[in-house]
Length: 418
Image (cartoon, rainbow, N blue to C red; front, side):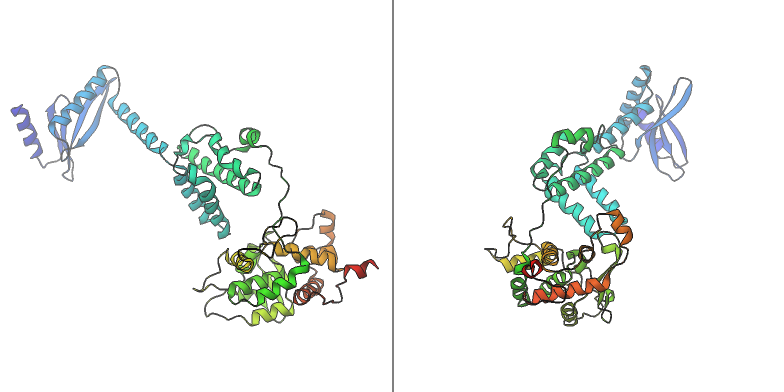
């Protein structure tokens, strides 16, 4: 053994590049850069091959010989040591891949979507819905171990009560599992797939549409009077949303550059519209007055800016309504009894326009930026009807100011029936 150690010591002292034999197919290899490692040379099926065993700085002679002996035993069994080494490395990679959690994969999917996202709010919804409904039970689970019954267990509690949200969560989970399969983190069918998978378990998902809680239009003056007593940007943003019958996201993203004070028009870019089409909103005198009273912050483009200069949060309008309602809600939906929400004021406006005015239906639908349901009607009605919508919004603003205000196009129902 002392002679063998002497061999190794002598070989390790070499600085010239080359291979220095240590017996039994074991060599010490010196690279052109001076690094030294053990290799094992062998022949199998008439081919000469060599396999790296490890660095001489970390591997001693005893361990190097043990590895060389193990390789020779494999050769005796007709197994290529290199192929075996690759197979073990691949198995180890697969083992590590199997430990990838659902949340790990979801983070990559969300990051990929963020790169090309046109709507940051949509990406934020991905994160919030997964954090709320999926991560508590499946977030840390290895993505390769999740079954369709696990997915069903996540969706079942909200399938009937929050069906639209549940459907979106299912689709987002399906995308995460697709990514996991592509990366080799799981095998087999996608557990969140719909047809032939979750559909038999959850049903076809046809549910009665649940409307957002809305305030009866007969109480809008009461609400607006209370709202106008409140200070703060959020209160003004909610007031503007009601006067324009716009969606919260459209109002929160509104910029000064979108307002034409001379024409009394707010032009919302297609990118912020649900229908992905530019939309002109006629502004009533009340809406114009509200905007002119707003403070302008230097270098901040938004009408309703947060304290630090960015946009108000998505919850700003909702929290304003909640504060107005207090612990015992007074502004509630007349059917469900639920506290009203900002989006519900679009329904309030729709009911007012339909019940209290003679404005045509297509004018009202245009005001709400709704797509007309009938294809023939859409083909003939390509105009934005802006002048007629301006009259409608003026009537709405007047009614919000004082319910008994009657404009040229506002006809109380009792009079209309006479």
